[in-house]
Amino acid sequence: MKRDGSNLRPLIQNLILGSVTGIVVGYVIRIYYQYVSGTDIVWILFFIIGPLIGLLSGRERERFEKLRREKQSLQENLEKVQAAFKRSTNKYRLLIESASDAIFLTTADGRFIVFNEATCLLSGYRRERLKKMNLSELQTNSETAVKHHKAWLDNGICRYEDKW
Image 1 (cartoon, rainbow, N blue to C red):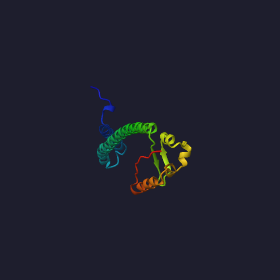
Image 2 (tube, helix red, strand yellow):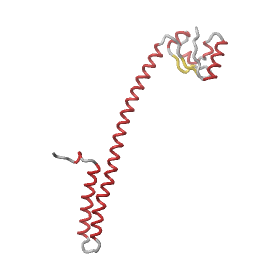
Image 3 (cartoon, rainbow, N blue to C red):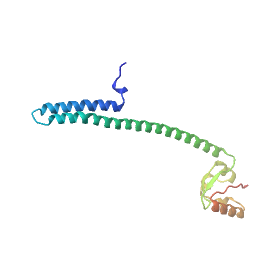
Image 4 (cartoon, rainbow, N blue to C red):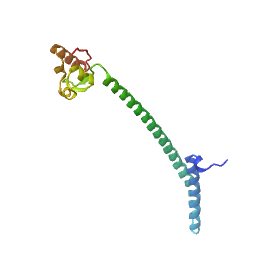
């Protein structure tokens, strides 16, 4: 069975490469400085340091590959979540826009932020005009408008039905 370099773990690849490099560099230094004392120690030092450097760099390569795979997995998951969110948003928008009831959001002072087409149809105002209006301008009974506005200010949410 033939094994090429791509099947070896990065740790093993770098360990082999570091060992070979350490031996070759140590041997070349030994030959070049054969007349200087202490070259055997340098050769032995490179013989030991080469594999050590290979081992450490191989561990770092494995860590890098693991992080790269995790990043890719997270990106795929993020894309799935974004697609699901987009589908959900489209369904929500379709539901709100096609509802026969008036659905709207207002600011604290009653200005319209978001509203559907049914709000325009039931109120009798065009979209552009409704954007400039206040909720209290739509409500005919001023006591009801004050009550709804007070309820909204008390708890931040006011759900109610009103007949126009």
